[in-house]
Length: 295
Image (cartoon, rainbow, N blue to C red; front, side, top):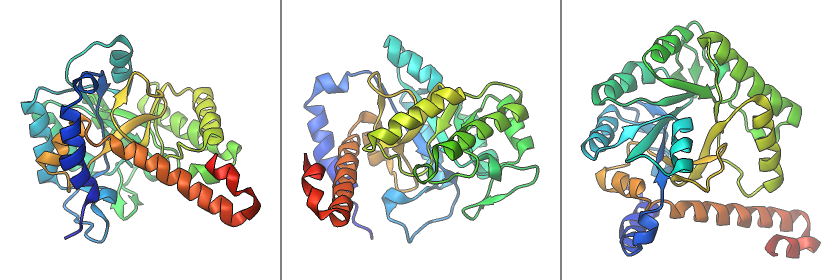
């Protein structure tokens, strides 16, 4: 059994502390859940935090919990409106990255059963007229995308080729943003203005995030999500909203704790780790400039 320090810290440190801070609990926030594949694949070789598969049974338990506790779903844009106006009740956003075909086959029937909707982010190079594989799993076809769209599922861009964007030139990044958006709009016949950042979001690289924010705006995006952990709040960057990663390892206790905000501490840990790694790499490459990393 894999030791889950994040689970232990969340349930036995963060959750009790959160209950002692009522002002924080009342802060307006909306959980944006990050799913990928809804499949029975176990991913046993991956640490629970990094798994991207949720079994149909666990996914159904998540939806049942949300329904029993009075949650309703909305789009990312609607969540931003609620946060800005500080209105609304128990709202949640369900997002699915990578456009896997099992969303159509498994996730959507369950969403429909519980009366929920969702936003699916598509890497358009892998969405075709016939199923194309991405990371070993088939992706949606355009006919399935159009069918889901008719039933109220929102779609957004997840780039064209799902690259490590930070390694690309600005021109290549702009192509990924513009071409994916244009393709989805042509296939669905409606405007697309939401984007999901692929892979880990480099929130500590301020130069990159500023450039990327400008590129998103220039391409016509108005909302977006990333991999920074936490619940979206009125201080969140609208194009880089925090999300809560979920998978088959999220039992009822951990799932409930994440919704309540007890998992938000991970974001601070992420940021510190990235700064430390950046400083370490910088000190190894430029030993005379170590002080720049720690200032």
